[in-house]
Length: 210
Image (cartoon, rainbow, N blue to C red; front, side):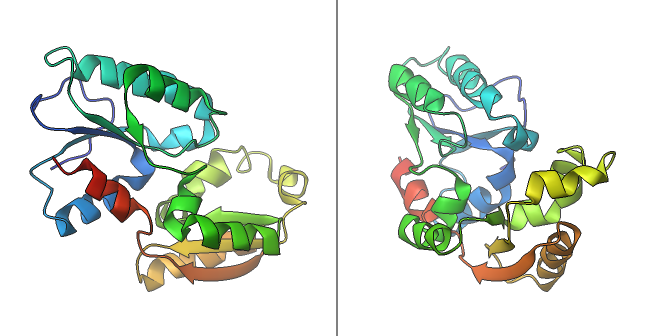
């Protein structure tokens, strides 16, 4: 099973479809495999770089959903996004089209668990978060994606209100921990690592079960 960004069509109209963020594609595939659902659910991914452009997410999800229901108007469709900075616009699409999305404001919350994340945020508001995917792709998504590669002097302006970087680790991967720590050093932030596993993503995947 492959998560396809910008796929032209859908091959299995009788299966539930999961539209997800490309930044959690690997984690979603791992949970589907562990749940025995790899062959029972079709998945398609929107570009991970939209992590930096949340205004694109609602329209992208709607376009995918409309295309997927051309052959079956009542096809069950699930959305592997939290609100992710859309300000409720993604929820409006989900309500209008009867789509079911994972609960929470962002992936940090559903990986850590809502209560745990709220406690982290309350303990230190000036916290910047990384997941496995963001640690692995820090350079293109954050350093380059936020313009710091060409304007490094903007680092203090953009991250001056942050005091720590928390790496929410989905897997026990020493190399990713090193990469996350290096990211903290580049941003001049204190580093902390917290192992979360897949968190509430597992519960959401169970709800997709046909």
